Length: 82
Image 1: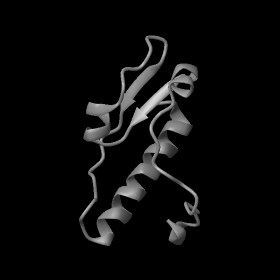
Image 2: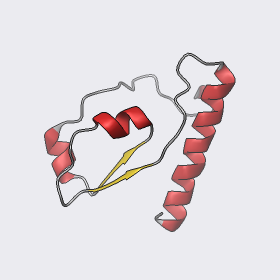
Image 3: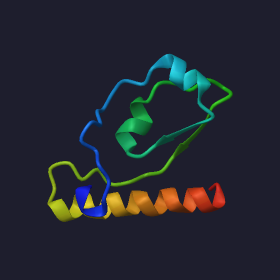
Image 4: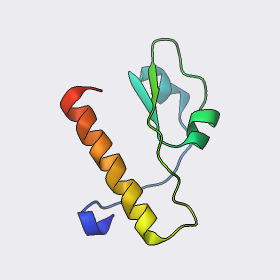
């Protein structure tokens, strides 16, 4: 991530806090595992799945590819709301 100037030094993978989930407007899952095991979302929360390959255990270039795909998807969402 550093090569695209994103500092993730202090980032962690945490369990979703129920209070945060209840106050969310939108929940986005990124891989099929997260889509399958993510807790049920309250009825007022819009939940969408943006499917990406999981690069775990693969070449570094796969991590870069998926990172770039996620970045493009976020950009599209910020521009169009889709």
